[in-house]
Length: 429
Image (cartoon, rainbow, N blue to C red):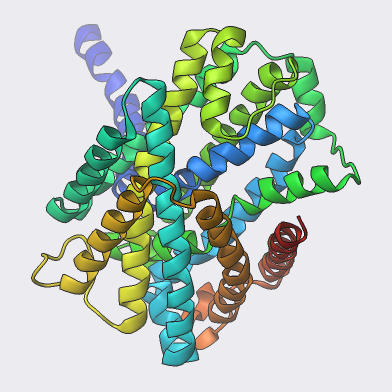
């Protein structure tokens, strides 16, 4: 009698354990099915322009601006969460909702501004690709055309799931900046102190840099792309809890990467008083200070970020413009089904990459113009978003609560003020 009883005794406990594990496994499977839009959108914000801004901040001010990463992360989470929620609940992209609720004329003007800003930003990404390629001994006349063909082929020939998998893999390579930071051997005590203790200087150059660090985090194109990606993936209000986790995870990871870029350049270039003007300068300057592996990891991060963003920015623009005008769009559609979508995507890549290869092209002027347009568009886009997400007829019970509304409006006012201040500063200097 004792034998059979001892064999049967563990079974109830095992069954209970299986019952406990089953909901967890189902939740994990559901999350993995939803994951993508939030992580991709937030990480692509660490593009060539963002990496350059963070590198300059670390090289010029050391660890002093590390504390800004905390409020920046909170602001990014708030804005991205609202976009993804609207996409899941309404099943429509942001440009669609703006056209339906604010009219065609206003939407058209917004799309024209976004088109020019994103074309300039796309050029900046191919410029970053050219710079990182040259660090590895590859001329821009090879790296830029090869990169352009690759990003075009990826989106035009792939399905949404295939493209998303490639983008998620690209996100993993941002770990190179974390490894660079560890190889730089920073003073972790100083890092911790500056992360939790705000340091503010009234010097114009410091204020400009602080505004640049905050302003480079939230761009107009991000909101349009994220909401369109959520819709394209088929996320609904029922799945939104997983989508929110995806968004928050992406924001946290993106800020961690930015934190380590600041940390790396602060621990090396700032300590040795080495001036830089670009992310390429930072990667080259790291070699004698922190070793070639640190330098190559930093340069590889720039290469990955540039190719990644060169894929996303034209795609985000094609989504936004086609939504705003009412054309067919989406990676899952064929070229014949959505000729305007793929035609615009192709044109942005050809023009963006082609102008980089023109000798004497005014790249700095183009990048400057893109930041000015972004600064003008961002406050308008954020206000549109807040009006839409508080529309009970549109969002129902998913509209903002009073507390979240307060946080969202405060974030919008702060980010808008900082971005506009950056534009004004650019004109003054």
